[in-house]
Length: 419
Ligand SMILES: NC(=O)c1ccc[n+]([C@@H]2O[C@H](COP(=O)([O-])OP(=O)(O)OC[C@H]3O[C@@H](n4cnc5c(N)ncnc54)[C@H](O)[C@@H]3O)[C@@H](O)[C@H]2O)c1
Ligand SMILES: C[N+](C)(C)CCCC=O
Ligand code: NA
Image (spheres, rainbow, N blue to C red):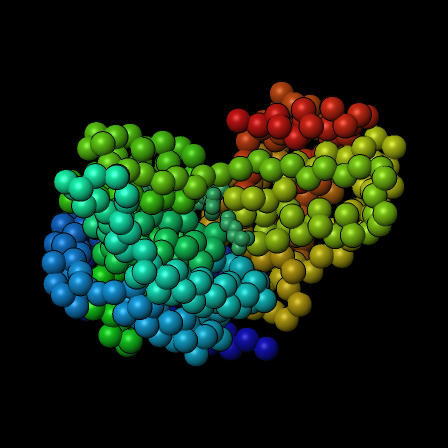
């Protein structure tokens, strides 16, 4: 049983290796989506704090204790972070569930992935040393030529709430492995574990300024980071519309940018499948894991007409048995969505689908046994056509839409019918 009373640490911004109150002293409430209660608050960074963090990052790169490290030295820091994450796994997982509504099982698995990711990039950092300077043979006596692999500089990392710590460290770990100085701006909807990463970096003695963590709102903290002239690259994971804004800001400075955005992935089930149960299990996993809040969620089921009825019967039977509860409950399989905004958005998608003529085969509402919390029933929608919003747009919630096909060509065309 999880300890629901894990205290929520009250942190400041993590800048230049220390905790620093935001210049404007503002804070943002932390809401537990399972109870709708305010359980703490996080600091809200603004452009002024971004300036301070960028300065700290530039200093780190100029200092020998970060700027002149070998990959092997940086790998030691990454492995120390991984070990601390595992040591604190139970508390971190509980904090992640309280903040984001993820089931405790999923949060714990995320923490294993976080540690694994730091280990993976530690290996790559070590491997970098022998490749840092590779000669290039130009068949010329007049020139000596090399390829030098160097860190890019200061990198800004802006991340979403669906895997709060995991999506952040998919960027932090490679940036540190490469020897960059990183500034992380996590999502304001779930930042607790990212701030705890700051505490871990302090505990293991990561050189100051190698990583700063600025919590805060997108336009107020993420915006100034993306458009800062001394941030050499932006790496962003989040929604398409925000990605487009980030790319626009970066383009003004011809700044490199990586974007990992949303999706509307298909899962295709053919009638020659050996085991319908396994297909049903993966279909449910694909759309209901993390309450459907996954960029790669398989939100469109495309099933061959001849088995559609039998397959849907099976899906329906299992969907009705999914345990929806507080994510810290044992055996919880479906927690709430992350926020009131996300809850409204998901319900609106469902009501729009209904008005466009689709059938809600199952779900579509708040579960009756839960009076509080941003819970949505696992939902299956049929009688969908390809011009409907539910077929085209990312819901980012526990909502599966279904279409049938006759031929393989038709299945492929439907699968690829996405922007
Ligand atoms: N491709 C992937 O690997 C992947 C992984 C996880 C999530 N996602 C996508 O993320 C989306 C859900 O996440 P979200 O709701 O947090 O996305 P979002 O775009 O609303 O926010 C992502 C981040 O951008 C920040 N932000 C918002 N406006 C900004 C602005 N104007 N300037 C700078 N930063 C700004 C937010 O504060 C947050 O930190 C979904 O579309 C999902 O598919 C993709
Ligand atoms: C592989 N994970 C852990 C499901 C992460 C998916 C990232 C997108 O939301
Ligand atoms: Na939260």
